[in-house]
Amino acid sequence: MFKSLQNFSYRQALPRMLADFVTVHLAAIASLMGTLSFHALVNSAISRAFIIDTLRRDYLDQFVLLSISFPCVFLLCGFYTRSRGYAARYKWLVILRGCLLGSLVYLFGSVLITRSGI
Image 1: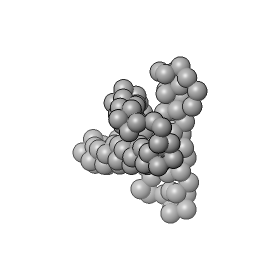
Image 2: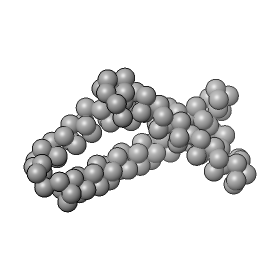
Image 3: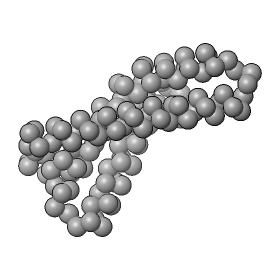
Image 4: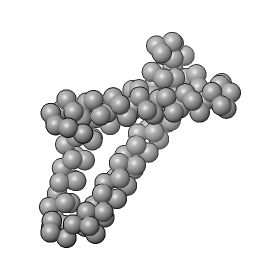
């Protein structure tokens, strides 16, 4: 996993890291919007202001801090250095492994920060 750092080129990797970082944030915002829509439709007893405030707080207090884990895990998995040269089938396995590992690292950090269940 750490072999991927040997061929690291900032000039080539930083635009892709930034694109992945933005993609992760857009996915989180879309997920929060889906959660807001679901709660607004299903549970009318909870005020929309409360739901919006809770989701905004979760995003700003937790996700922004932990979102840096995704580019770090992707870097260690070789997304920005070695994965370009892989065959298509193996490349998809590497990407799937990196995304799952990034999600697990995020969940672990989330549990450590909030000290609550998932």
